[in-house]
Length: 84
Image (tube, rainbow, N blue to C red):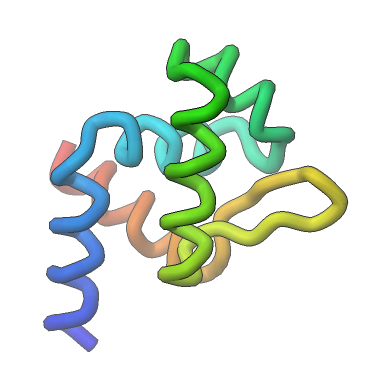
């Protein structure tokens, strides 16, 4: 699991936009992708692509157009805070 965590942290920390999206969803809770784009100042198409990539890794989940962190995503967000 530690190796997986390191790999996922590398995936998230390797891209400031991914990192920002995890932080926003962690601090503000679930929201639509367009709202994520507005809050993070990241273009909506980029946000949608990043959310899809993170969803493939089970870090975020979408229900009825609302995105939120999964349990694994919450762990990553906590780890980001520690390293912050």
